[in-house]
Image (cartoon, rainbow, N blue to C red):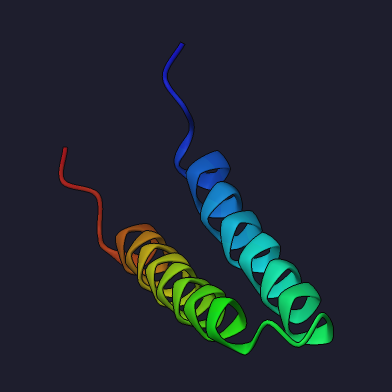
Length: 66
């Protein structure tokens, strides 16, 4: 069954949130290199989620051609 666009957006946001939590955990363990790498990954996931959500919003506003 194909994944809905909203499910995909939620998945991207969840990936970003998970990476942020993992980065915070690594930072708390004073593993700063891993924390930095995870923070970078979290940022990339956040940007992807934002772009995807913005694209969905633009598509929703676009007039439907029948």
